[in-house]
Length: 228
Image 1 (cartoon, one colour):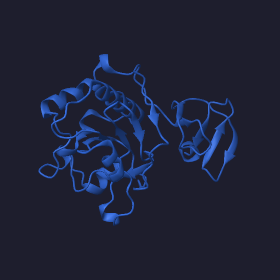
Image 2 (tube, rainbow, N blue to C red):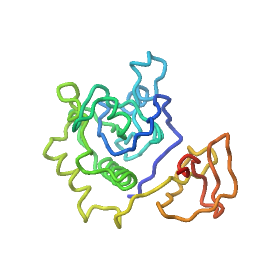
Image 3 (cartoon, rainbow, N blue to C red):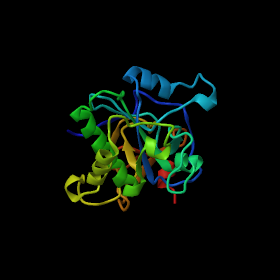
Image 4 (cartoon, rainbow, N blue to C red):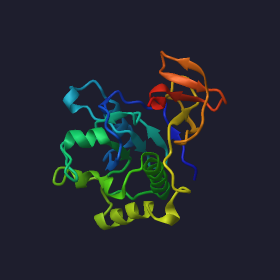
């Protein structure tokens, strides 16, 4: 199975600026509804702002992966929570949230688990997320949230540990860099990633979209990712 991330079909307006915070945490959720109802909730901006929610990614039961919020922004997926000394605001600003199509009492399809595994591996590599910072929603909000449901703590801890074992890695250990998009808008399908030390040349800048085109025609990158 090859991981494909759909970055265009479903985009949530529910997000905020990370205020310069680095991404170093991954939080796993279950939607506890259907795909349709989960996405309707995660994309809804017609309710009072305090009731709006979102996540960065959504993995359905067929193994399809959708990017709802660009990881450059903070999605609203954690609520009142704490983890290793961090409070709610810090968790929101430093984390990536992954929602999955699952309702208590359902099985977990193998294709969905594999898509989730590959997505987690990709994000762990890209942002160099330590194992202790991969957490279940219920771990950061004990007594308030039960998700991800039908996934016992001991099984989930073992699953997370396997993400960090040599036999389960995507390849040689490295931190992936800036996404390369197929479209000038910078929100289309991802064509690849710039490594941290990849030499690049820019042949065109698009200020209105905040993107630049790579001279070697691999695609477009966000300008802010090239700064510094």
